[in-house]
Image (cartoon, rainbow, N blue to C red; front, side, top):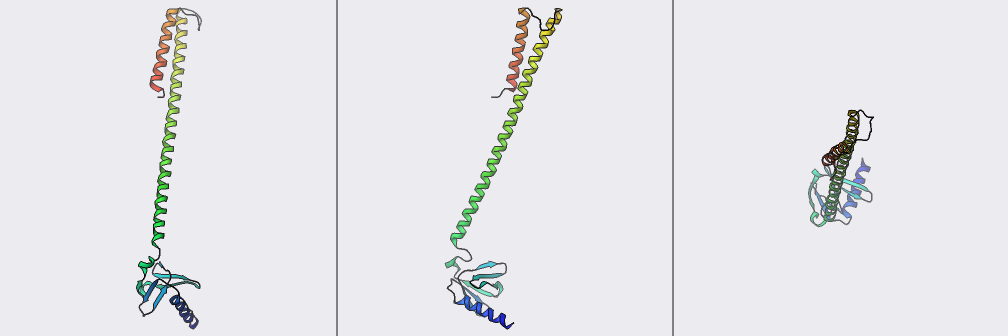
Length: 175
């Protein structure tokens, strides 16, 4: 116990004799002169060459010199932290915006692909219907499928085919 008391006074001596900018006045009348300090929960602490030293806040009457040394952190450190936080938030916002843009582009590409597939399906259906109509005309005349039809029948079938293709492009074409 006696060794602990000696160490305590040795630390107090080292603390009070160092160059400092912060004065802590305790309830028992002692004045501690610290170069720097931090607030850790219910204690004021400082780092010395011999280690960390803390005293309970409830035993401190006043802390002076804070305005000169800006307390636990300098004003420059506070500004630096504030700028870092703002930069971090801007980066996160940009990442989120980039992600939304990428997601929107993905949806646009998917929709474009679906429209292309629908257009191709419509054009294939029009082509199949044209071939069926052609073969139906041949069958009506008692001829084999894919026969040579009279030009009047061909003109009608070709016009229907063109109309069907135009309708497909009107409905599904990419603009």
